[in-house]
Length: 353
View (cartoon, rainbow, N blue to C red):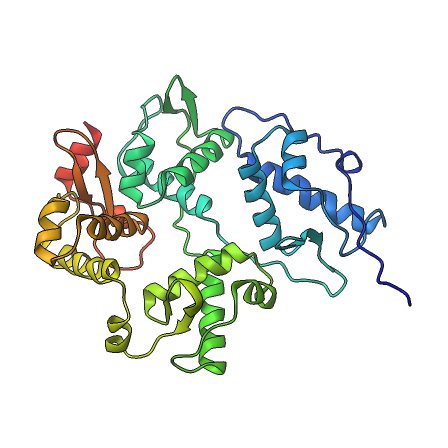
């Protein structure tokens, strides 16, 4: 009885990953991703590799290239979203079959949105060459974009010759760039639209959606992208997610969904409503102890609700004597990527000082 031949394991030496030299501020993920896509394309064309051959592990590639495993994780995710590879849990990452002409998705990454937001910030607030840029933390608060993404965008702006790093600060060196607002959707937003269409055509309220790995195969993206798209649909009320065996289901009426919510989710909705009705950007929320007493829940439940709102970009935390939870965006204030344009002039002044 013949057995199926196992896939070939590609070795690190045959890939010759000589991309371990990075310029100051250069985006490592983008540079390595571009190298890996180019290598896969040329190796397939020359017949050195075949579809379903297995790539080396992230750890091995990270070691030889001279970057962290988390950086390689981001690289694999990026290249997978571009359609060149696919990862299977407990199996590894293999080369996808490109014979059928997989059409690459045109997407706008979070990094590109952050780059554009910083360019708009430089133009709108009258920076001059030689001026020092505000801190990454303040840029994150102003734009509603995570610190990590802001840092990656700053690296891209260094590579483009718009800013330079000086000591622990960033200095503007070139203002001749053109800035046009990016309105292209991120890949997660595009996949969320495709998932919404799939749900409307194939599922009914109360049905459980397929597992993330099946959806990832269906839409030819990474499991992480499916996870991000699902979170967007949960926020829109299209899906409802519960931990454990319940999984993610198509949402029913708002009343039935509310009845199944965890306490922290109910508190999150209440705080969300409080912010939209009573707060302006820069306002400080009542203390966790006060909110816990107000909503008749534990401080731990309030803390989890606040953490979720902070992750979504509505709050920022500050420590110290005058610290607390501060509003950085108003829920349901609009889908504009440049949320920071709604900031008051007084708050802008405080941020610059």
